[in-house]
Length: 268
Image (cartoon, rainbow, N blue to C red; front, side, top):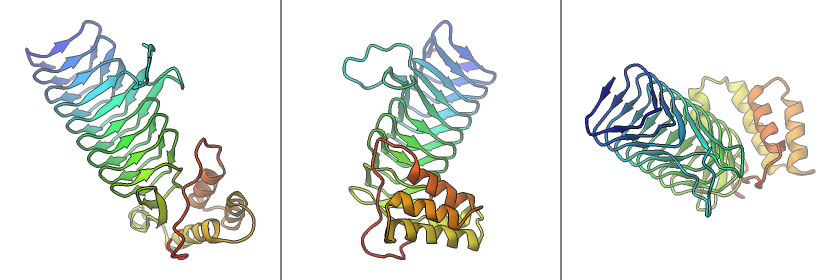
């Protein structure tokens, strides 16, 4: 371990092998740092926080702070950050609250650019990318591989499905289905994230089935969105990505579903 003499590491903190703690950092008594974690400088880690192996936190990052709730008196909230994450300058992540399960979870290998924020009780998947100043309201659920453009924001309790891409300056106030692209001050779907799907190595047949599902669910006629999602899942049985989209539409949620733009029925 390498701990700078100006850093404060409280008694009780657990530090793995090869941890580096730079100048003017603060590590609280209930913090656990995995092997090889680096706190560059001026980083504050508090609360009941566990940071996975190999994470790197840059100056000004504040993780494990209290839930940002008026009158909050909950002291047992937790924050769990997976291995290999990068938190650039001024990133903040809060612990969970008593209004939910008391834990905020961030997956592995996430890249969080300067000023981005993960609110209390959020669940964030693996391999996500947050551009500068992205903000998640409390209780948000973000799937694996989601990409957020700069200055986008997610309202409390919203879901953003696996592999989706949210454009810069987009306000997400409804649930975004997996593998979609969402844009606008109040987000609308602009089709599927085709570049992302190709990068995943999905076959042409799978992508075509997903496009057909998108068109059927959001531009089809007859029945409800849920009815059309069930029909698409049955029509393309055996295609996991279609099932993911359909199941997302059918799942219970506290928010409405983000809908597709009115124009461009073949937008997927």
